[in-house]
Length: 311
Image (cartoon, rainbow, N blue to C red; front, side):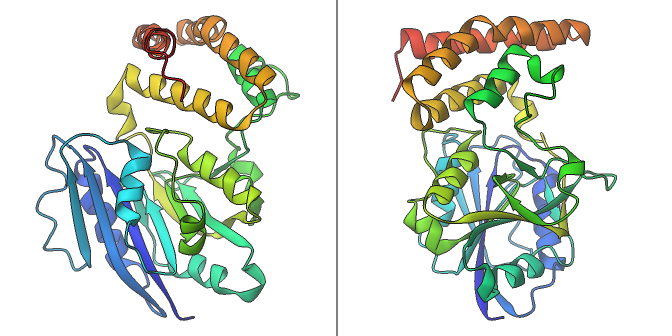
C-alpha cells in the first residue's frame, strides 16, 4: 500500500476532547501510508481548545475562524489545497485505535474496491458498546414516520439511523456517520466538496447521496473501529441544535425530493412535529426539551416564513 492521507477536524468548544483526538492519531498505526496533513478548523471557539497544540508530533495546520462558519464550510476550508489520495473528516470527540486508519486505507486501496468512494468504521461509545455508525438515506417515507412519531410504533416505518445490530458485519450502506468519514479526494473534488448551505447536519447525507448518484458506494468496515463520544459540541447549542437540524432537513428535501413530497413534509414539519416532539418530551418529563422544541420551531418559522430564505 502506497497512498497519502489528510485529516480534517472541525472544532467548536470541544475542550480536552480535541487534544485526546489528536493524541490518538499519533498512536494509530501509520505504516505504509503518508499522513501529509492534519488540519484543525476552529469555528470561533471560546474555550481555547485549539490553543497550545503545537507540541504534538503531528503535521498540524490550524485555521482559526473569527465566526462560526458552520460544519460544511469549515470542512471545505480544511480540505482546500489537499493533494493527498484520501481525506478523513474526523470529529474532535472521536478517538482512534491502532488500526483505525491503516485498515480502512488498505481496504480502499484494493483494486476490487475502486468503486467505493466513502468508508466508515464501527463506532463505539466510551464503554466500548456499538453506537450509531451508519444510516439509511432519509426518504420522504422515513421522514414521515419520524415527523408523525409513527416510526416509534410501527415497524413499517424504518428509522433513518440504523441500529447497532444492523451493522455487526461489514457491508455497503447508504451512508456512514460523519464522525469518521473517509473519502477519496478525487471524489471530493468531483463533487465540489460539501454543500455549504448545510450549516450543520445533513451535509454528509447530501454528500453520500450525490456520491451514489455519481456511481460511488459507501461502505462500513466493521472489522475496524473508533471511539465516538457524540454530542460534545452539538449539546452546547441548545435550541439551535434542533433548529439547524430541521433547517438542514428542509434544504435536503428541497434539493432531492419532488415538489409534492416537499410540500407535505414542510407542512408536517411546521404543524404536526412540534407537538409530537413535545409529547415525547412530556413523557420523559423533560421541561428543557419542551422549551427548546418550541424555541427551535419559532426560529425555523422566522427563518423560512419571515426571512424567506429558501435557497
